[in-house]
Image (cartoon, rainbow, N blue to C red):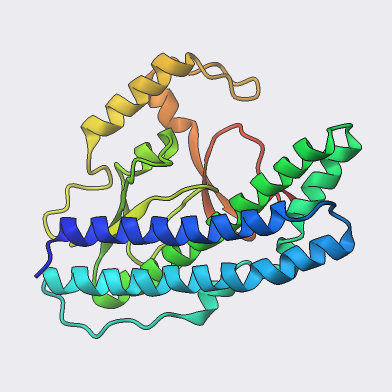
Amino acid sequence: MATREALTRADEVAADAIRSRVSRYIASVWGSASSLRDADVDRIVRQSLPVIRAGRLQMAQMTASYVLGLARVDGFDRPPMAVDPKIIDYRGVPDEVVYRRPAVQTYTALSKGTPFEAAKQQGLNRLLSIATTDMQQARNRQARISYAGAGYEYRIRTLTGRENCALCVIASTQRYNAYSLMPIHPGCDCGQEGVRGAGDPGQTIDPDLLANTYAAVEEKLGPRDASGVPAATTISDYRNLIVVNQHGELGPTLAWRGDRFTGPDDI
């Protein structure tokens, strides 16, 4: 039987492969447009959405299989939880609307005098951010269903080392209720592991990593002034600068306190 470490590593590799494959395809479709008039944008959306939706479904199926493997290693005997199709359309906004936002990003840049190729690149960056966030959300939301269904009480964040920022590292030192949606941020590629409640050390599971990360943030960034609030000077002050915003489309989202909250038009 595979170990937890082997299962987790395989899950990370599979997730990265799905994310990379979808990203390469939609970047190619976007790049093939010589202009971004309505007809071009319609074509981009029409060609990209089936691949993006397939990527989201694959993420969910992969997550369900991964949790089933962990549950077997940990001795849980509940039946596996099937993939919930509702997680594919979690935003409450039609995909056709969401995936026109990169074109709006481009138009906005052009209106400010940005050269076309640079503006088009901004639109591509937005497209990739939306698509990878959607795939991560499919992974995240299926994990909640599968872990809770298997009988786990908590989940912890696992770091892949590819996209992990200070927010991810700090969040990885905390545990999450298995029934709650884990907060992530656009571009996040963290994984998750289920953990039992017996012998759990509390909300903070790695106090040394937490303290070291805050110290590294403080050393690199210096005192952080959040919209006129006195600058942080201690590790505890930095802890207070990390918040979870409830976004209308994405759900719980990690952010620095004082950052401008992202609205639907920014996603």
